[in-house]
Image (cartoon, rainbow, N blue to C red):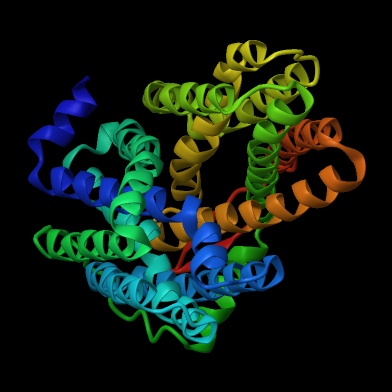
Length: 410
């Protein structure tokens, strides 16, 4: 409760809360319907749709990584967020007014790729503000802010269905474009201390590049990224196969699928806040290790379900698993790489994107050849793999420490 009061009493955190909610709502409004937009309006085949989405994601990962390094060395984080939001707004205007595959691909790899920085940089800016105004409650406040994204995802798909029905995809993309412009305006109103240590050098200097490579090759970073991607692979594969398993194997209906998704999403919001409190007390690494155990428990129990209500009953395990990975996971990465919140949050976000992309491919391939049960079994194995990977850095007593303002060594 104290952390919620901190958010309500701080004008900067209130504005950031609105911005984060709008960005999450933008994702919730568009991402579930992008495949339908590509097929129904742009006439894409499954292959061309896959290429379109993969190219956009890869471009976004590259650009957001470059901007993350710049944001940690120069006082430009707010301007990166503003530029990303303006770019997204322009991109969605293009989406609203064209059905050309070539134009859509170019927009996806330029304007929309530039917009990838908005989400991680917003949370990096939020971390700076929280450390300034409520340093003792960083973990809890960040969990509250991350829970706003889950809340937005509960509302987004329902709102999108209504907007598409009334105003088609054109109306949907124009609404999202307006939301991104509002975020840009709100961010400009936020006061943030973005001072950097002098003598940082240019972003593309050889020393900076070598420093970033050393960071990525640090054992604790490598194993943490691999663990997080394993968790996201498991989460994505389970999320994709669940509605198919319910309707095709258990002969359930769309109502059952909706109930499962709704219960899971509703549980995630309070769970993220509670886990943030636990992470504050016991440490984010301890809570992150528990993610694998809850993931294994959920997917193992899933294998023995015989009806839709049984799947609903075990959603608490799934909600805790997802809440740890997506909620505490961000703070975990920020704590892992101190003083480089932009890079840390972008690593988290990119690992999430890569895991989601890989999970979709694996779920389709494994499900097609071996069936839905094997997909769930693979998800359980990946959750356990993530748990094991998080044990490795501590077992080897490897740490990541700050050296010389920008260099991290293991």
